[in-house]
Image (cartoon, rainbow, N blue to C red; front, top):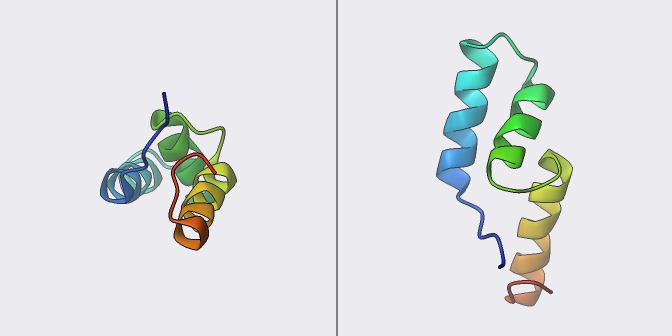
Length: 59
């Protein structure tokens, strides 16, 4: 199964974790990415960048 990122949920989850949870922005984004099945925020953003370039899910 391929994970399709939800950028709105990612941003909301990261903001809540940062402001209400006291995490750094980096930690909050990693948490939000893991909630969507990615290893971390870098993996999340790389997936989105690859999709924009290839217009294909899963490479």
